[in-house]
Length: 408
Image 1: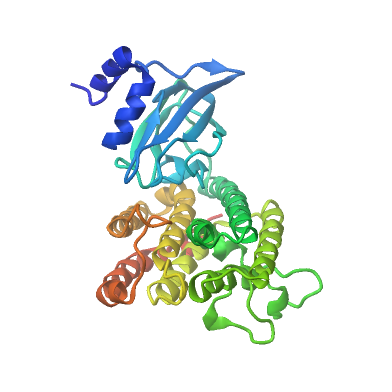
Image 2: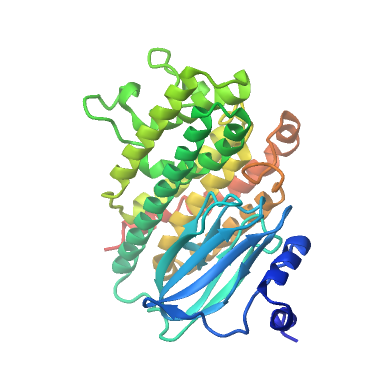
């Protein structure tokens, strides 16, 4: 018997409200309606996704299929404290997402034009994190033309991904600033790790910008320094700035001061500047490959060592952000790599899956950010294992840049 038939039958007799209540209690993945495609309104298919339930809740879709064309996904978090984001994926690529989905906030939506095929709805932190979403009708176009054209198409898709990540970071930083301005220490500490991963996903591609009037070597104008400077590379002449200045005040000093508020305002300003900059960025295929490699080096050098989040110990949140960013960069190159070196592409895909599976063992929905606190005890016990998993991925990934750079 198909998996979802009993639930569809239940809806017919009890209605969606009852199903939501059952899902909240059981943590099940529930699908509403009778399997019919989503209705079309204003030219776009309409899909509603409700998040419900504590300690590993549910992503409840009112429809799991839609006709090819524009599709709007409207997301409402009712009571799911363990689920803060939702993504629509295809072949490991994030095509659309919404993050910072705290319970009780207004419904948010995103619209994508999709061709026929099977996609995945990903709800990290849910009891069942992945479920298929089917688009019927004309199949999505397969990559055509030369390998160089396919790679160029991938770079454009990646640019859209980066733009979306920074947009989401703006929202998360704004929320953190509101907490700090209000003097709400507990809320600020909870929202800090929800804002951090965005920069970790795209840092390798956006870290070289200098504000007008500054030299490239001047940390006082280096946007990367101002957003993400760590204690270990503190420039005493420039002083504390960015995320980690706020982290120090919240988690080491345990208080919000006027200086904390000043740092939050500056971080908001600099993130807004970054948001305007990335919209005009273009990439070469080797940029994506080199950026992915750089992000994994970040994992080895600052996350596994515990250096990145020296005060909050949310290093595994940042670790996951780096890995996601690297995986997305590779995913947008993968169609081209399947033509250049399919065996290498398959190997890299497999190693990413292994790293992600290992990371999943550290998930903890009770902790803001979704991962265990990286204590000294956890680092002592698991650092070597984490490092080895990244090293095994780094070796094949390091070969990608040269291969894509030499295709014409």
